Amino acid sequence: MTDTTATDDVTFHQIGKALQPVFDPEIHMSVVDLGLIYGAELGESAKGRKVTVTMSLTSPACPYGPMLLAGVHSALARLPGVADVDVDLVFSPAWDPRTMATEDAKEQLGLY
Image (cartoon, rainbow, N blue to C red; front, side, top):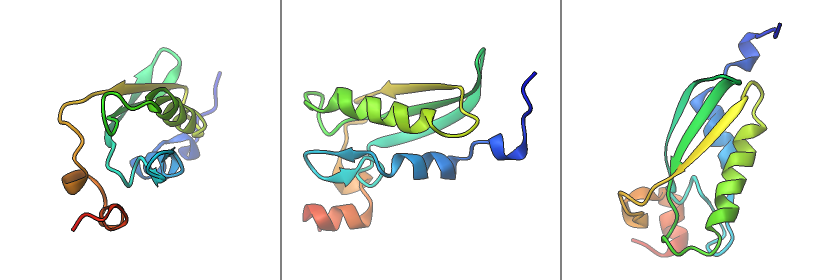
Protein backbone atom coordinates (compact mmCIF):
# COMPACT_ATOMS: atom_id res chain seq x y z
CA MET A 1 0.00 0.00 0.00
CA THR A 2 1.32 3.43 -0.96
CA ASP A 3 1.11 6.28 1.52
CA THR A 4 -0.05 9.40 -0.32
CA THR A 5 0.44 12.73 1.40
CA ALA A 6 -0.40 16.29 0.41
CA THR A 7 3.21 16.72 -0.77
CA ASP A 8 2.54 14.11 -3.46
CA ASP A 9 -0.06 16.34 -5.14
CA VAL A 10 1.39 17.75 -8.34
CA THR A 11 0.45 21.32 -9.27
CA PHE A 12 0.59 23.18 -12.55
CA HIS A 13 3.09 25.55 -10.93
CA GLN A 14 5.39 22.60 -10.20
CA ILE A 15 5.04 21.41 -13.80
CA GLY A 16 6.05 24.82 -15.16
CA LYS A 17 8.95 25.08 -12.72
CA ALA A 18 10.15 21.57 -13.62
CA LEU A 19 10.09 22.41 -17.35
CA GLN A 20 11.84 25.80 -17.01
CA PRO A 21 15.37 24.28 -17.20
CA VAL A 22 14.59 22.40 -20.45
CA PHE A 23 16.34 24.56 -23.05
CA ASP A 24 16.19 24.63 -26.83
CA PRO A 25 19.91 24.24 -27.65
CA GLU A 26 19.73 26.30 -30.85
CA ILE A 27 17.92 29.29 -29.37
CA HIS A 28 19.34 28.93 -25.83
CA MET A 29 16.00 29.56 -24.14
CA SER A 30 13.60 27.54 -22.07
CA VAL A 31 10.80 25.66 -23.83
CA VAL A 32 8.48 27.38 -21.34
CA ASP A 33 9.68 30.90 -22.19
CA LEU A 34 9.55 30.14 -25.90
CA GLY A 35 5.90 29.14 -25.55
CA LEU A 36 6.48 25.60 -26.80
CA ILE A 37 4.44 24.15 -23.93
CA TYR A 38 0.82 24.42 -25.01
CA GLY A 39 -0.81 22.86 -21.98
CA ALA A 40 -0.74 20.27 -19.22
CA GLU A 41 -3.28 17.91 -17.75
CA LEU A 42 -3.21 16.04 -14.48
CA GLY A 43 -4.86 12.67 -14.24
CA GLU A 44 -4.53 9.09 -13.13
CA SER A 45 -3.20 6.02 -14.90
CA ALA A 46 -2.86 2.39 -13.87
CA LYS A 47 0.55 3.36 -12.45
CA GLY A 48 -0.72 6.35 -10.43
CA ARG A 49 -0.58 10.12 -10.92
CA LYS A 50 -0.18 11.04 -14.61
CA VAL A 51 0.97 14.27 -16.22
CA THR A 52 0.19 14.85 -19.89
CA VAL A 53 1.88 17.78 -21.60
CA THR A 54 1.04 19.10 -25.04
CA MET A 55 3.94 20.83 -26.74
CA SER A 56 5.31 21.88 -30.07
CA LEU A 57 8.71 22.54 -31.58
CA THR A 58 10.04 25.63 -33.30
CA SER A 59 9.56 23.74 -36.59
CA PRO A 60 8.47 20.25 -37.61
CA ALA A 61 12.02 19.65 -38.89
CA CYS A 62 13.68 20.68 -35.61
CA PRO A 63 16.79 18.49 -35.34
CA TYR A 64 16.63 18.64 -31.53
CA GLY A 65 13.00 17.50 -31.34
CA PRO A 66 13.70 14.05 -29.87
CA MET A 67 16.08 15.56 -27.31
CA LEU A 68 13.53 18.20 -26.26
CA LEU A 69 10.76 15.60 -25.92
CA ALA A 70 13.05 13.42 -23.81
CA GLY A 71 14.05 16.42 -21.67
CA VAL A 72 10.41 17.33 -21.01
CA HIS A 73 9.54 13.72 -20.20
CA SER A 74 12.52 13.35 -17.87
CA ALA A 75 11.86 16.64 -16.05
CA LEU A 76 8.25 15.67 -15.35
CA ALA A 77 9.07 12.10 -14.37
CA ARG A 78 11.32 13.45 -11.59
CA LEU A 79 8.44 15.31 -9.93
CA PRO A 80 7.47 13.70 -6.61
CA GLY A 81 4.20 11.83 -6.90
CA VAL A 82 4.32 11.48 -10.70
CA ALA A 83 4.10 7.87 -11.82
CA ASP A 84 3.37 8.34 -15.53
CA VAL A 85 4.23 11.01 -18.13
CA ASP A 86 2.89 11.49 -21.63
CA VAL A 87 4.30 14.16 -23.96
CA ASP A 88 2.04 14.89 -26.91
CA LEU A 89 3.76 16.62 -29.82
CA VAL A 90 1.50 18.82 -31.93
CA PHE A 91 2.01 21.34 -34.73
CA SER A 92 -1.39 22.95 -34.65
CA PRO A 93 -1.42 25.75 -33.96
CA ALA A 94 1.96 26.39 -35.49
CA TRP A 95 4.43 27.90 -33.05
CA ASP A 96 4.67 31.67 -33.40
CA PRO A 97 7.09 33.42 -31.03
CA ARG A 98 5.36 36.76 -31.55
CA THR A 99 2.24 35.47 -29.81
CA MET A 100 3.44 32.47 -27.77
CA ALA A 101 6.78 33.46 -26.24
CA THR A 102 7.13 35.40 -23.00
CA GLU A 103 7.93 39.10 -23.19
CA ASP A 104 11.51 38.41 -22.04
CA ALA A 105 11.96 35.77 -24.73
CA LYS A 106 10.56 38.12 -27.39
CA GLU A 107 13.07 40.75 -26.33
CA GLN A 108 15.95 38.27 -26.48
CA LEU A 109 14.79 37.13 -29.91
CA GLY A 110 14.65 40.74 -31.11
CA LEU A 111 10.88 40.71 -31.64
CA TYR A 112 9.17 44.01 -30.93
